[in-house]
Every structure is written in structure tokens, then in C-alpha cells.
Amino acid sequence: MASSEELIELIEGCKGQKPSAQRKLYARFSGQLFATAIRHTNCREDAEDVLQDSFVKIFKHINSYRQDFSFEGWMRRIVVNTAITHYRKNLKHSHHKDIQDVPATPRDLENFSDPEFTAEELDLAIAQLPLGYRTVFCMYVVEGFKHHEIAEKLDIDVNTSKSQLSRARKYLQRVLATLSARAQSTTSTATGIAGTAQ
Image 1 (cartoon, rainbow, N blue to C red):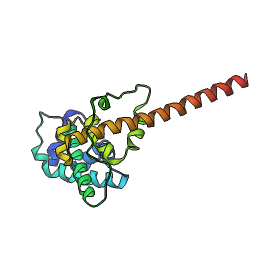
Image 2 (tube, one colour):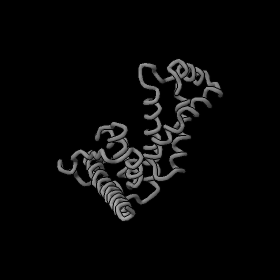
Image 3 (cartoon, rainbow, N blue to C red):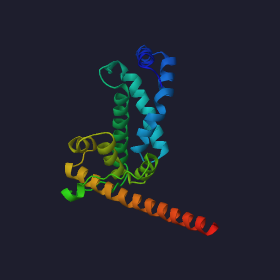
Image 4 (cartoon, rainbow, N blue to C red):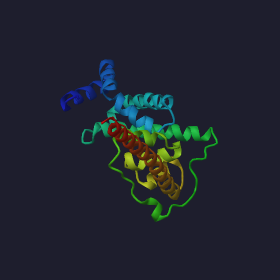
């Protein structure tokens, strides 16, 4: 991991449009930013496009970065905004049915958390969400956007954002319940086999 001095030096090199600094910055952060991009897209190819476009924007606008903010947070915001633009552009060219105008009830919006799953299992479950659900879920839960911000960025109603979040949580609960049931079944089968072997 780069020290803060090395990072400042990299940023300054990128501000001076030095290709070596840009390559080092890309090598240092591309994996982490790709993870952000893939959470907001439908497939690996779309995530790669979003990442590419994001780095173009990062290098173009790096002079606007202020050091009193987290550099990683600043870059992540660019990736999220680029993914949203990509999402909205693709929405215009397809008959997309994920986002619907259905008001959410307070009961729908109960917090979802389950400590028995690893981060990798949660990432896999999130990846199974339909794109509309996943976009709202990631923006709200992972990136910290508020519903009014999501509604504005995706050009949807605030209640639609809330209902999409609620539906995403319910979908995730079903996926995680299935994973949990499989894990318990595997554990009990393994215990039974071990008991028979003794």
C-alpha cells in the first residue's frame, strides 16, 4: 500500500500529466475501483467500460481534487457517477423493467444485516440482484447516497428508490437464506459421514 507521501507524489505527477505516474496510479487503484464498477453494472465488460471511462475522467479532472478529502473516496465517486451515466444511457436503449413506481412501506424498509455471511458471500449475493435493484442497493448501502440523491441521479421517484431498496433487501434475504440452508445441509451431511466413519 502506498504511503501518503507516495500518493501525494503520484497525484502531483498525474496533475503534471506524466504517463509514468498515471500508469502507477492505475496499477494501484484499478482493482479496487473495478470492484466498485462491477457492483453497479450488469457484466464484466460493462464494468471494464465504466472503469476505463472513470480513469479518463480521473486524469482529466485530477486538478480539481482537494487534499482535504479522501482521494480514494473522490475516485470512487467518479466511478459511481460514471456507472450511473452508463446505466441511464443503456436504459434508454432497452425495455428495462427493474425500476417501477411502487411506493415502499416502512415495514419494507427494515434494516437487513446477517453477520453469518462472509464479505465474499455477500458480494456474490449482491451480484445476483437484477441491475435496477443492485444499482439502488449499492448506491444506498455501499456508497452512502440518500434516496433523494439516488432519485435525482437515476431520474426516478424517491418512492421508487425506496421500493427498489426494499425489494433488493428481500431478494438478498432469499438468496442468503438459500446459501445458509445449503451450508447447513452440507455441514449436517459432513457430520453424518464423520459419525459413520468412526
